[in-house]
Amino acid sequence: MFIIKLFSVIRAALLGIGVAVQLKVTVITDLVDGWYEFGPIATMVVGSIVFFIAFLGCCGAIRESNCMLVTYSIFMIVLMVLKVALATVVFVNADSLATSVKTEFNNLFQNNQTEFHKIETALSCCGTEGGQSYGANIVSLPPSCCAEGAVACTLLNSYPGCNRRAEDFISTFSTAIGAVCIVVAALELVAVVFGLCLANHVRNRDRRTRY
Image 1 (cartoon, rainbow, N blue to C red):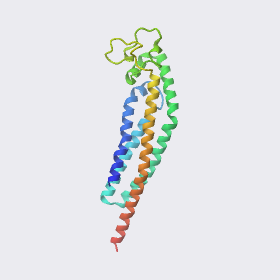
Image 2 (cartoon, one colour):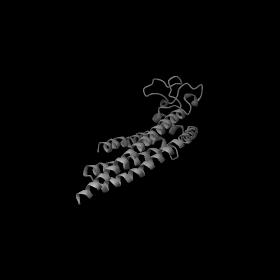
Image 3 (cartoon, rainbow, N blue to C red):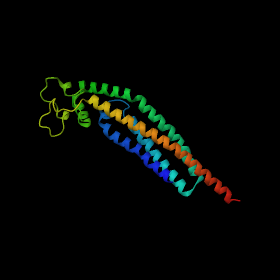
Image 4 (cartoon, helix red, strand yellow):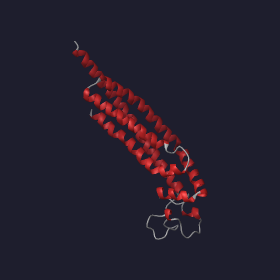
């Protein structure tokens, strides 16, 4: 019982990470084309489903229901495989995703700087490679390149480049998602064994009470 509750809390981390990442990248996915929202959305979906299945396991343990415990274990096996697959996809595609985002940023910076300023504000970055992206001799940079309230926005107090911010963010995001998925999948293997053992105990007890 305690183990299943503990796993429920850990699995909730998937939902939390997905929500946090989705809120952070919404402005980017609104401005550039691509499948960048797939990772956080998939994480939220898997996290929500797993949280529901964990609740099923808790009910099965409380009621000592063989059917609910076996169903819980089967769902856990399926979700364990899905989490390993999700972690693999995130890890394998992290570098290509970072390259794609930087390409989109470069194109947007060249063709629509007004919209690019929204990305600068969202990610606290400046230009594609820093303030020098606007020109080495530029005197004043756009307000979105500096912290709010800055007296003057120049190369000296501007944010780092958006390409570097995006690369760091994707690296952190992919590591967090992948690590949590793998850790939770490993713990779920223990939960499956625990659930099946408890289900077997309940089934044997019911058999003994009939005779």
